[in-house]
Structure formats: C-alpha cells, structure tokens
Image 1: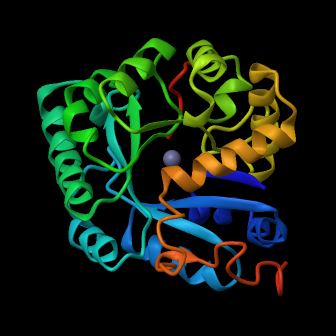
Image 2: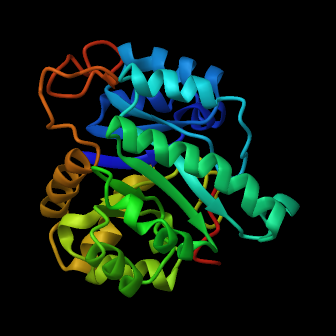
Amino acid sequence: MLTDAHIHFHDLAERDPGFLARYAAGPYLACAASHDEGEFLETESWGDRAGFISSFGIHPQWPVWKNADFLALVAGEGRIKAIGEAGFDFFGDRADRVRNEENDKAQTGVFEYQLDLAERLGLPLLVHLRKATDKAFLYSRRLARLPGVVFHSWPGTAREAGDLLARGVPGFFSFGTGLLKGHKKAIESCAVLPLDRLLSETDAPWQPLQGQSYCRLEDLPLVVAAMARLRDLPCPELEAVLEANFHRAYLLSRGESDTSGLARLPGTASIGEGLSGSDEEHG
Ligand SMILES: [Zn+2]
C-alpha cells in the first residue's frame, strides 16, 4: 500500500475532482491536512467514501487565530491524528514570509499554541519549516516530549535530522516531489537517514513536478520509486517499510478499537466497496 504522509484533499479536489474515487480504489492511505473549519468538515465528510486520517492545524503561511478553538475541539474529540501543519515559514517570497520580528511573533504565537495542545493531548505534530530549520532545534526539548513529530518535506540536512533524533525528538522525515526535482538536501537525507524514520508524501496539489500545474495523487508512486532507488531497495519492500512508519508516526496501532478520527482505515472498513529549484519551494 502507498502511504501519503501529507496531502491536501480539499485543494486537490478543486483541481482534480476525480481523485477521491481513484484514491479509494487504491491502494492508498493518506493523512489529509486541513487549515480551515469549512475545509476540514467537507474533507471529513468524505470519510464514508475513502479510508484516510486527518490532520488539522494553523499553517504558518496563515498564522491567524480564527480556527484555534475549532482545532482544540476536533483534537479533543479525537477527530484528527495529528496537529498541523504547524511551524514556521520564512521563505521570503511574500511580505508575511520574510523573517522579521513581526512575522516571527505571529508565527511563534500560533506554533506555541499548537505545540502546547499537542503536548496536553499526546498528539503527533506535523511540522512545516521553510528557511526555519533552526526552530526545530529551538523547540527540540518540547518536541521530544511528543509521541511523534512528522517533518513534512524535510528541508534540512541529514546531519540536522540526525541531531534532532539524538536530542530525543521522535522525528519522522517525509519526502516528496523534491526528490524528483533534484533537491540536494532531500536526496542526501532520504539516502542516509534511518529507514524506520522515513515517510513518503505528495503535499498535493502543491509541489508540482516540472511541466505540471499541480501535484497529483499519482505522483506518489514516482516519489516512492525515487526513494527506493536512493535506498537500493525493491519498491514493494520500501512501500511496506513506509506503511509501517506511517502507522507509527500517526500512532495508528495505539488501540485497534480507537477508530475516532480514522475515517475508514483500510483493513478496518470496507474500502473500495462503492467508489471504488529550491529545496523548500512547497506550500
Ligand atoms: Zn502542505
């Protein structure tokens, strides 16, 4: 089974309305991210058509408090398997992504709120970092207390990833189409990090391959094939490892009966019964 540690179902559906049926026909298992109440509720309602898990967070590219109470609500009710994406974005391609005091303060506020919530509820944190890898070290002691930290589109070096693990951060390092676009740090990290710490993702529809207007669900097997080449492993073997890592990262084996927030996880439900440049250029 192919596992996508980070994808935006709602944004992808706007560009590719047929993707959900193809996803349900699988075999796929994804963690679908939402960042606004309406987006989350619509995505959640698709749970009767396909098996997936959800994350919800206040994105650093939109560091507002509008959804803070809603996040606490769905996290408390067990409707999400991770908080995020949360983090820092100082990529500099927009005024609110320039690293300055005002932006740092705004992003820090919502990040610490989410870190606090993750600590209190014992939930994994899905982390987005661009030009901000230092923040992972700044918060490493608190991150180490969480049950899991998924660094989506890991933007750092292999050495930085290793240092975070050495500090006790239960990190999982997720890789996507950057591997296919020649991002050097991603390629190096994916090649040498411990195999049980790797995840695959698309971040679809964001992070399109060259010549495409958006990233597709079907880019996932290309990502996994690139990872398999880097690890010199047969694709099916790596797929199984990535699937096991996905389950560990999002605590899916923690009590088989706890299927709250777990929309029809394949194996527990009837999936397919009906419908069947830069290293950090992601969103
Ligand atoms: Zn994303």
